[in-house]
Image (cartoon, rainbow, N blue to C red; front, top):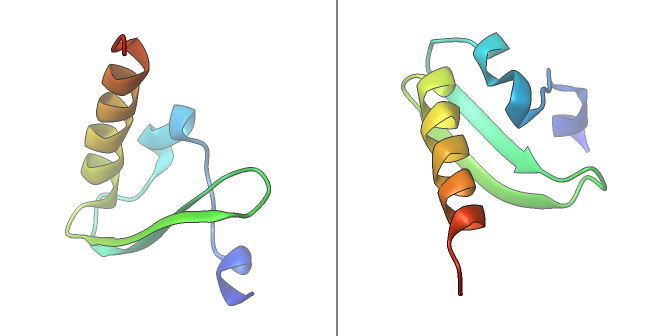
Length: 61
């Protein structure tokens, strides 16, 4: 797949992402795509997404 050749980073290294617009893909370590999105500021979007994921992990069901 073409997207596998794109620059990639971990959620933990989200500060290394660019602060400009673009398309991003969220995939797991097995290359299973979970989400494809577009953002005006990729770094800001991933920061917000990471915070939401952490909130979900801390929520008791």
